[in-house]
Image (cartoon, rainbow, N blue to C red):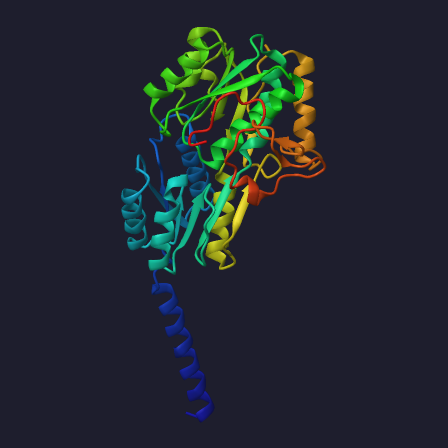
Length: 362
């Protein structure tokens, strides 16, 4: 046998061995993606919307990822334990979906540099920790315009969770929307100091209604405010989810938060090795929020006004915090001709004119 023939045999054998090795190699395991939730998944609310996003991600990247979640995780030390356990279990990406998870996520991120952490509504980043937030105030402003046009008492009420910038800017945007069409309108706020407590939320809503509010909304996670509005015959704007089923007569509209497209995009980037840390803000234009359908009880001219403003926001021609922005003490916070920056929004710690209540600690 010639040397050339022996070489051919050897090459053929090596090719067969390589092919056999590839065939025997196990397929790459799906990447683990974890979610930490502050409340129960339920059938509406903040956590429910994030879980819809998780399910959308899992369907979009079927075979590439597996997801897990832990619900009802208190903010603070317990959340740090849960986030760490997810990282230890091999999660490639972890979404911490509440403001109070910021420092816990940052602490764990330092210990697991090969895991990507994403934190909702915070302001701290690291080499492997990014933040994401929705421009919820865009929807709040539009809801305020409708409320300002339709209120008879000129009083609206907000059931609020915690006095943090994310919540304060939503209250302020609602008030600015109302006052833009009704200078006599005022917004009153009751703080419940919890994200999810239907009993407290209901009592706060009833208090506001007793004070004359004929328009109410909430910055909390249950539908208790909506149910109280339906019971008392006042109007309500949903938040987080479309909550029409809880208030079929009372709901005029609302703001719905959507996360699935973002979750799918960011996990794709992590898998491709192209993800970079930073701050992501998304609004109506980006699909992070959408407007709940307006009730047939809303007159056509009011609907047309709200839809026109929505289109202007999407086109970048209008901003709910275009100056002048004046606080309730008369101080100009944003001069005429200017627009508030994201950096200043992330630190918003004052009420604007039109909010009748006092901010805790002020």
